[in-house]
Length: 353
Image 1 (cartoon, one colour):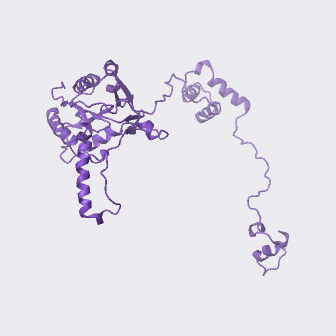
Image 2 (cartoon, rainbow, N blue to C red; image 1 turned 90 degrees about the vertical axis):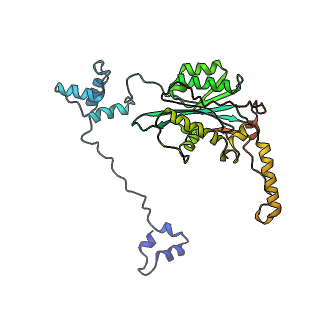
Image 3 (cartoon, rainbow, N blue to C red; image 1 turned 120 degrees about the vertical axis):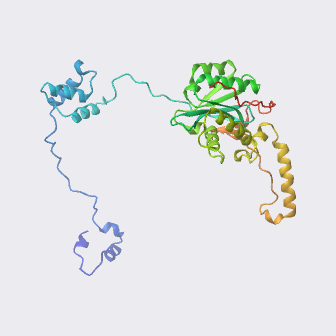
């Protein structure tokens, strides 16, 4: 740095650094270096140790054991006493970690992340309730709908003007009996709404040998199939938007459910939920493969990747799959080859509303 200070005016710093064999950045002063600064004086407004102790003794006194700092400040001020501002009260308590609520509070809850796998129909059902608006302001109907996770097949539904556990019991009693569900063979996945968590409803499922699974609070992704189904329902072209009454809504859903069950579904490789639910995938896949093979024979130039094969529905459908598990573990689910009974119409038009 001394040579740089005494260098001739026309000589650049770059040439000087090259002559010294030093990189250019070392020929400049380090701007990060600062002169030693004398320690700052304490602020004149800082409370003394005696004043600080007086504040804490008042806040910790039996008189104000249940009072907030704002209440303490107001009561002292009404008595003609000022120790410090409200913010100072809070600041002193915050430094001691004493700003938490003093009243009894529910401890934080930790809910298990649901992880479900279905490799055949009637292994996992997922259900939910959605609101259907009416022409009366603030009046809604309730659509209870049960979906088979593996096939996306609607196995039961109900329209009601109320939302309670009694109607949920009525729906599940009829649906479980209609499909002849064996004990200890089905898991019902649901959110944590009041009908789903009511003791009367959970007792019914336990009595009928049905296991329960619940979503985490305020996590809609834990029940994605029911949520997606409700969006499909409400975005259907002939969805009226509003209904006159429960009977009109019931008639519309009665038309929609068969249409949904018998139309191609992207989630099951464009097979219909009915095909997957009733075990017709192999028959339909053979017809599709024959058509593709014949078309490939006539127009091979259209298939740049070679002979086409029919896409099949996934072998397993998951809710929150564990990525650490391999495919063999995910597919190792009892009941994958169990026979599927013929479903019974469970529209439940005679439900009491």
